[in-house]
Amino acid sequence: MKRIAEILFKFRSYTPIPFLVVMLIFFDASWISLATGFITAITGELVRFWGVSWAGSETRTTSGVGGSNLVINGPFAFVRNPLYIGNIFIYAGLGIMSFALFPYLQIIALLFFIFQYILIVGEEEQFLLKTFESAYEEYRKNVPAFFPRFTPYRNKNISQSKVNFRKGLKSEKRTLQALLGISLLMVLLWLIKNYLV
Image 1 (cartoon, rainbow, N blue to C red):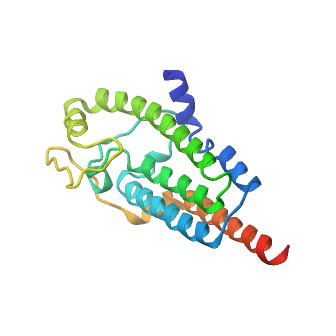
Image 2: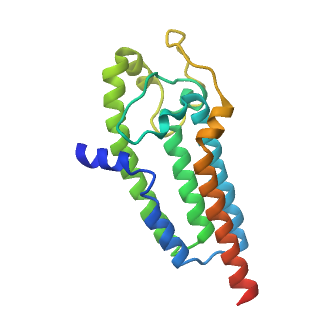
Image 3: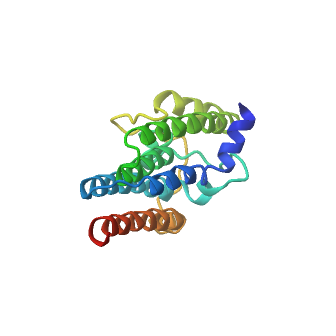
């Protein structure tokens, strides 16, 4: 499983592509699905942007699991894996927008990404435990992996960098471009299907 987790980590930016292709082939959107899905996807992107603004561009690495500091502020104070939660909202949103093979494609995609992130998080947590030891163990005991707590976790003994929204936006540029590009393509497909065919 370790080898599978390493492969999934390395190619995690590309695993959504087959699902996107199926979404476009079996595209069956309505204006309601487009609007609902877009709001869902943007919610996911806002979560990602918030997280990346605290964690920095290290979140983009594909060479291997790593990290130079333990981030416990921002969304990380509520949940350990906000970027992956953001991703799931983005993928779910695009699935709702397309309404392709609904709900079967969306359920299969959700199960795949849950499987992918459980494996990746397992690898990441081994690294974090080895690197940050008791500080990460304490954090892990108090902050859920995927279902946010209601109040922010605080630990004054763990030094934190300051939030940097400018760097966060720079780091998220590709994700934002991809999300807006795919959303625009789906809107164009809907317009063509409903008004030009």
